[in-house]
Image (cartoon, rainbow, N blue to C red; front, side, top):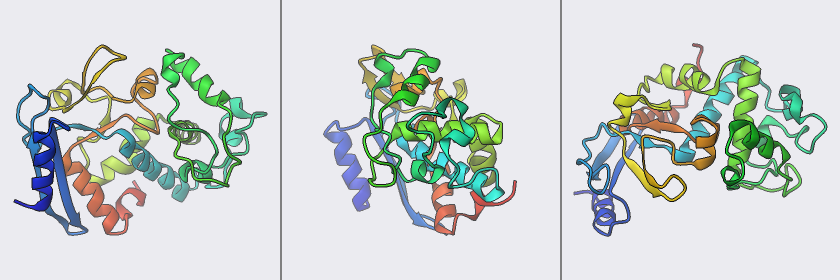
Amino acid sequence: MSVLAELLAEGREQRVYSGAAWSVGDARGPRDRGWTGTRGWDGPPLDGDDLWDLASVTKPIAGLAVMALVERGTLGLDDTVGTHLPDYRGGDKEALTVRQLLTHTSGIPGQVPLFRDHPTRASLLEAVRLLPLTARPGTRVQYSSQGFIVLGLIAEAAAGAPLDALVERLVCGPLGMRDTVFRPDAGRRARAVATEDCPWRGRPVVGEVHDENAVVLGGVGGHAGLFSTLADMERLGAALAAGGRGPAGPG
């Protein structure tokens, strides 16, 4: 048994999580991979084809879609929020750039539980627009889920397509990541690993995005919402290790 296998099996035994999967490799593919535990505390054993909530790993994948749009000339890294989102013109975020949003230097605060007071998509997006900046843009790295919500809106506006369609067309499709999706269908949900017993929803969350702000947004956001399998993440990792040509190539 590998060191990773032992470590993750111990986490299961200590009830840190019901199940875990791992893969370590390079551009040639995985060198050590496996899984341990069950899909939920009372669920079936993991079988390697399990569907995982990627949580904030959604951000770099959405970021790849944005960079593909940049390479195509659809977006520019120094394009401003106000260029693509008219509602932001005249506000404190109008001059923020795509580059700042990608690098978490926009000054938009992150980890804000807007869902508690804004139960609809329209009201939550308005709350994001009105969030006061907590740093001067370009001066401080400040991890921001809300910044990636705005980035996703920019990608949609620039490309004239929904974010989930852009991620599929520009990243997942070219790499053959067939199980990496927003809002998984019933067949995929049947393979999903539980994320938590959610106090806000009053039930265990299985096959539905864990992030509450993403729930209010309908399950699709630049910050959260993607689900995937171990095999698909290996495809992505190998492509990036090989130079990332897959997501950025024409398609």
